[in-house]
Image (cartoon, rainbow, N blue to C red; front, side, top):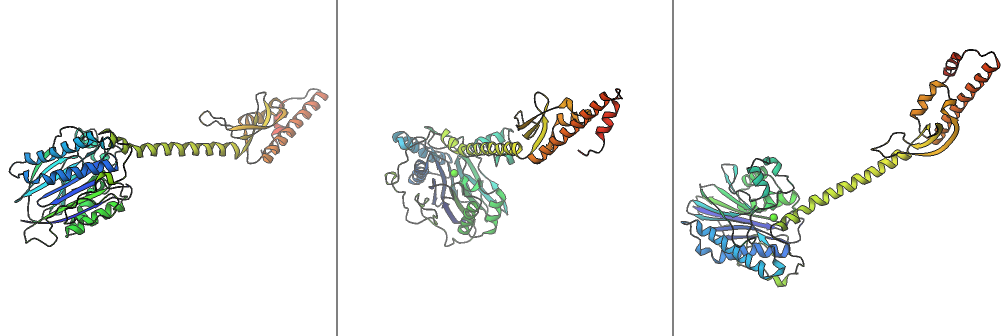
Length: 423
Ligand code: CA
C-alpha cells in the first residue's frame, strides 16, 4: 500500500495571521489549529507539531496509547510555555493526528479539527468535534443542521495547552485501496459544507490539486478563518512523484499563500522576531470570547439600525401629513402628523388652533372631526377648517332665522346641513 499526499495552509481572507500548523511526515500526519491571539495561537499549534515530530519515533502502531502519549507530551509543552510567558498565557490548540501502518489508520484527536474519509464517492467524518454544539447535538438539545450555523459553534470544549493533562480520543480505521483521508481545520469545515468537501475530493484526483481547490472554495465562501488541509491517498500502485517524506508546517504569519509543504524541515521564526501581542487572553474562555465578538457586534448594529429606522419612521409620520381635529377644549385645530399614537409615542404637533368649537358644528360632522380629518398639506387642512367654519356659520344662520320666526322645527338642520357637501 502506497500513499500520495497533498497539503495546503492559508491565512484566509479575514485573519491577520495563520495560527494553523500541520505536519506531513509520512506515515504521520497532523493538523493543529491554534488559538489565543495570533502570536500565541501560532506558538501553540507549531509547538504541538514540533513536539509530535521530535517524539514521532515513540509512536507505535501496535500500541495506540503511544499516540495519545504523543499528544499529551505536546499538551504539556504548550501548558509549560503558556505558564512561563505572560504573552502566551491562555493559548491552546486543537490536534488531529493520523498514523498509517500497513492497511490501518490510527487516529488521535483533540478539538474541532477533523479527519474525514472519502471512500467510494461518499464522505464520512471520522472524528467527533469537541465543541459545545457537538455536545448539544449529542444530548439531543440541538439539531445537526442548527449546529452548522449556531453562533457558538466554534467554542471548543477540549484543547491542548488548557490544562496540565488532556483527554485524547483514539480511533482505528481499516484502509482500502482508493481511500482518501482528509485532515482539516475548522476554517475549511466551517466555511463549506460536507457536500462541497465531498465533491471537491471526488472531482480532483490529484491530492495537491484537491487540497488547493478546497482552500480556494473556503476562501470563496468567505475565508473567515485560517484554512489548513492535508489529504492522504491510499493507493495500490507504486508511489507517485507527489509523495513527500518531509516535514512541513504552515507558512510564517505574513504569508497568505502558503505553498506545498517544503522539504527543508524548516521551523517557524522565533516568537521574539514577531510583533508581540499585548493582550494574552484566558484559556478556554478566550476563543469563546473572541468568537462572540461578531454576533455581539451584529446585534448592536441591528439595534442601531432599528433605532435609526424608527427615528426616520416617526419623523416621517410626524411631518408627512396634517389633520384637522379637536384640542383639549374641543376647538377645531390643525395638527401636523397623525392622530394615532405609535407604541404610545405622540405623532402630532398643534400648528393652528381656532375658536370654532365642535358644538358649533352640525351634528353629522362632529364625529368626523373628533376622529381627525386627514389632509395632505397645511393648505388642504386650512381649506377643511374654512369649510367647517362655513358650515357652522350656516347652522348659526338657520338657528337665528328659526328664532326670528316662530321656533320651527330643529329636524331641518341636519337635512339642510347634509345637503350639497362632499367632504
Ligand atoms: Ca480555526
